Length: 303
Image (cartoon, rainbow, N blue to C red; front, side, top):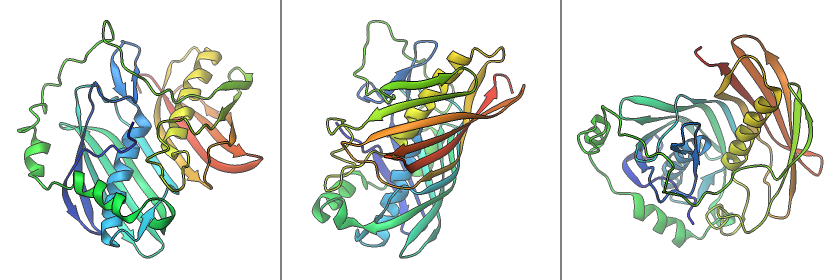
């Protein structure tokens, strides 16, 4: 099972920009059912797709000698779910690139709809030899680097989906193999105030072969998706009179790698709540050492 999400790179200017696509189909294992029973692509993995597109640009720019890893993201906004049968139009723009790090911003669209944006992303560069063989990474890039007419894809003349949107498939007879991105158990819960959960990292998880062959580590975006699901559980337990929905992830920072065999604990604390907005502050630790922090912003439905 692959953890590589860019299906095709249509345009790439090394050190400047990259544009590509990712089809969301029945073959995707990273789907979930929304409240209406529709299959949707995991929101954090839209961000992963954009990050991988930026990474391909950076790796080509330095002749595959270095690769970026997760670092800091100022803001990642979820504008709407992406349904099975839709195609993500991915764009990543390099703001600054040197021998130590890359800064970039990205946007994902479906037709004319903006569905996900990333701003203020900063990724340190590490030697490629720590993660994957030179031959393998070049082969992976060659598979997807197929330049094409971006304007035709973005206008919908090739995909034929700019408007109207396709009718979503509702979960009835069709079932999909689903990779759960959840914590294993709840350790503590104070409804409406805080929640603490644990995830034990196992080598049997399907994303490790691609992330990365020589140095398997938990993808930051998988951890973020676990936190989004924990935020939804927090809301369920809190039973607030105002319904909230996830809107944005702010101040994301990954401080260290999480490896198979680690036990990760995550604590979420209510930071702010009013009639319009609710903010949960998350902190994840391994053996008492901080590995990831993020603020999850939820807006009252209708705002």
